[in-house]
Length: 205
Image (tube, rainbow, N blue to C red; front, side, top):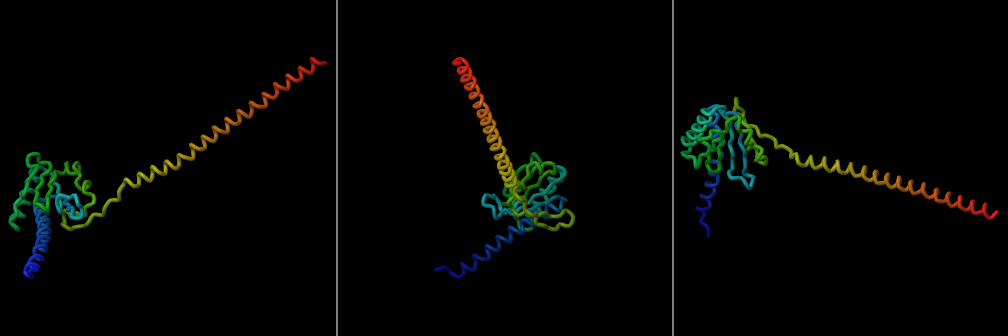
């Protein structure tokens, strides 16, 4: 028998976990906006089985000093509100791409000229992408791109189907030309035979 108390206590824990995940995403975004981080994007990865986290939060910084300022702002915002420290930090020395791992939520702070090079949005194209406006902080869900591979395969199939009739026409032409040559050679052989018979008749006379 399962106690009723256990049932009641299990429900708030799940609800609390979802609430902390959403709050953590908002806190990371607030920390980025505080130091003028631009092109802030949220990748919802919960429907992707191979994902290492539930959310990625990306932003861009123009300089190295802004990169560090955004990092410290995110850490302070999260710690002040929910008292959670970063599990892991990466990229502090190179200052091109700083990663702050909070478990279910991972913050990615890029230098502007390096973000396009790494292209995380393209790597996780199946995610639900939410873009945050730099001025108003309004959130809009970005529509998914249609795969380009299918269109290319269709074009290739069409090209192949168009090329096949040309080959067959060329083969039929070669057959007809060879048949014409053989047809022209046969009457020539008959003429030679006719000449021999006429010469034989003259001799008998």
